[in-house]
Figure 1 (cartoon, rainbow, N blue to C red):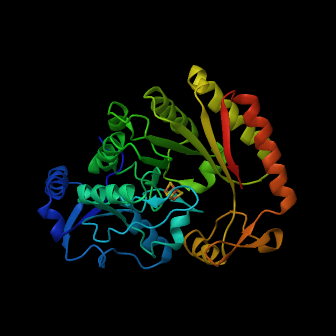
Figure 2 (cartoon, rainbow, N blue to C red):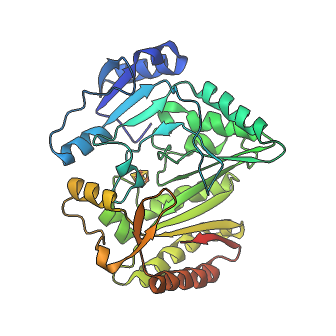
Figure 3 (tube, rainbow, N blue to C red):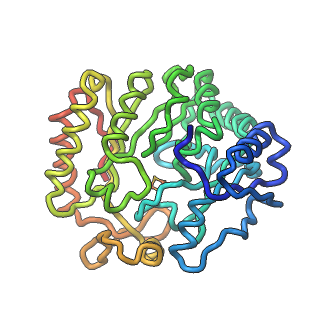
Length: 342
Ligand code: SF4
């Protein structure tokens, strides 16, 4: 049973021509918990209510759009993968700092696609183009795909597809727990599942509508036991009062819960908190009481790879973060592999 039940579900007319679209339409009708409407196009979703920025945001998150993915040109996804794999757009989480805040408009609804077979055909073409090299796809560049997985089965299908690709690999990151349908399927270790963690304090303060730390850790253990390659993304690292103690406690808890499971090679990615001017504006609109540290005077300005600048921690602070995580990860994880700390 999915944890996420949308308040309203909009179906693009064309989606109902696909078996997945028909199935979902029937499913939501029978469930009787969501308002259901038909749309002409998934890019013209005009009937989500909301007047204030906060209402628009909340109602957007409460809306699921079932559509057909028309654009089958995949975007590049440097540096973490070669291409984005568009299985879902949007996320039910309400993290104040989320990178999607600047990308999905004022009503950030969640879009799922019923033409997964066509998307995977296209992935196969991209893999062939890069032969003999291996091509890596990222399935969470514009979403957290896990909360809607019980509805779509998209990841499950995609993981099985990649299990048979000699030169194709998949990765995605999640904060959510709906992974049970992925545990017993053949994956051939071609899919890496990463879990996004933070201290319980930060989760509570900024990562609304997401599972707590222990739930995420327990879910990740199930994934390790299902023999998937595993990774942890600790982000955003925020150096609030007692941050060293809190992040050490996170690593310690993770190490204790994983027990023997941590003898596998575990990959870590660590990203310190950063923000752009545009993101700050939107965050303050939607979360006027946010306590996110966004004082430009306390940060260093850095030009990003896409031309806009961001505010990052100073070099001294970042060096401290790097030293801290190098030392502590080494202490708790014998087979660690730190991919990067930025
Ligand atoms: Fe954004 Fe991830 Fe939070 Fe979803 S879980 S709102 S994608 S940061």
